[in-house]
Image 1 (cartoon, rainbow over the protein chains, first blue to last red):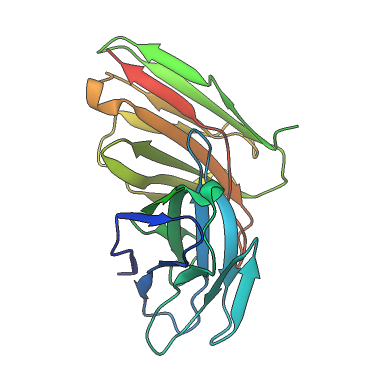
Image 2: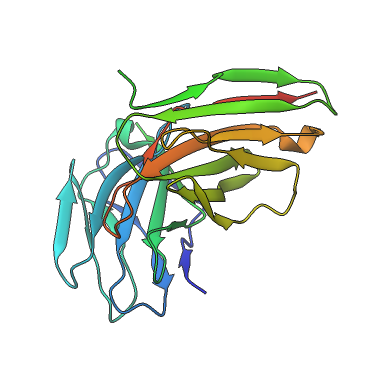
Length: 113
Length: 113
């Protein structure tokens, strides 16, 4: 079945350093839709960015991601981390043949001063 | 004004009791969902509804029963509560399209003692 893998459970880095959160997916569907959701402490998840176009960079609020179908990846990146970026980040995939989102296990990003 | 209303925000229940979590969305979406998030697990899909019909159920226990009295309502009834049911329960909604964003409610924090 469809699945999303986020290999890092916890990422801690210093303010100003680049961010890269890994996301790979598995699906039989040839045109997947990939999403990144962000959840700050005591809040609900909200959409950060999404893409369904192969090899096209998508940007929002300083973050960017590129869907690479050849490697089934949709890594989240930011050039310079800010303290306010500390949050739980979920990669998600629309499952084959439906509109249902399948979430990865999440990556907790902590940015230190 | 919040687009998805979840009530109550906090709930303390005694083991063995029954509670109903309320969810109403005012986004005009035709699909609604329940997710659970506990300290030990990531965002966990429970149910999906479309036009008031159950589309998918990933909850093993029959103690969890969704109820949809109106198109924009999806309540969650939990019977015979256990301490392990303690979690934050999020309601979400979307349109039935692959690139549709999920909008999450603010959640109901349930503590079973």
